[in-house]
Length: 79
Length: 457
Image (cartoon, rainbow over the protein chains, first blue to last red):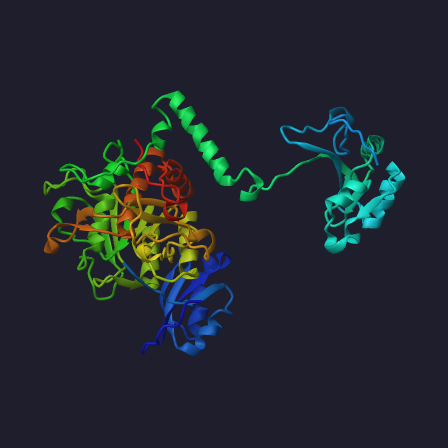
């Protein structure tokens, strides 16, 4: 897992990847993530990635949702 | 026990082949030891003692060593020499040192369909290919290269011969950047026509005079910032990937895929930073636009794998979109620090690009393959990344020089577009094409991968 980043006002940004077998129902995975407290920003069906923000304590619960392959802190990149 | 055995004197029969087809075992060029290896069928022998009984009953072998009798299951060559056979229960094999008559008995048994023996083969002598065994890999490689060189000389200057010539030092001319010359882009018949290439970076100067009249599809994924490049990096990278064949401003040619369709995704802010959310959104957008190639001159300086790039980039490649990514500039070679390939270039499915200088050497900053992040940690290929001339926004003087694996990456993306046009290949096949056609460099493979990227002619 990527080193934790500071938490902003709206929680920290996370990147969720969806497993291959759940790709076609990514919208329902996103709904389940939202029900566990993820404020969903984007649902991307081709890459199978969902982004959003969440308060620190809800982070671990997201990984147990069926169809979720990984949950990581959004990584900062640069040129 | 005295032994006299003739090499290949024995007719060995495999039970899974008709007797008529079962000729003597072929030793090829291998050196045989004189012993034979009996391979039992899977699960034919329940225990080593069962194997021992079988060898005694079938071939009259009394002096059979069982591997588990020996210390730590390792059998010394002394034991092999002094026994009739050694049974390796875990492997389901026995090595037979007995007289030829005994081996003949086993061979006869093997011809029976009910026999527990799968096959009997001569034992070959094996050599470790390490430095201590005489013929080291380096020696063999040198030998191979020398023979290859002689072969190429015999063939004349066509074919692969010129690949072995030392790389010349290139310089910019009034017509061409050194990078286009070194990659043989300037003599390519192709311009990337019909190929869609996305550059995900700090945006683009949409009013740049060299791109006047060129259709560009663009979108910003940075909140509160337009596509218009307030940095320079994005305009420079897009210029290298897709700049015109004859720049309207009269400067030398600097762009590779002059006829490709350019897609610009702004995923880095004008300050030059971004986050996965925006970058994956850019990849998703490129996939939706059916881009064949995505160029990403960006990265994070962590020597670890992250799923947030691993997964989407794998899916992109599976859909036929090749993602070309900068290996990174985190080395300081002069200080003995070779750096590492970080995300997103360390994703297994990302084509990671290192930088070379005009002499085919390594600039101080170019990152080396990582040995801790698996397959994806490799530098796959190299391209010009020093003193690279390209477009920059008009407010920053229209053109300029930059250094970095960021500059090498769009060379590869652009040349990938030329290959895609030339061959019709995309995705993993395009990857293989770039790899296969790269020009070997004297620099280590951990730094330059397959070598210097080359354009199709």
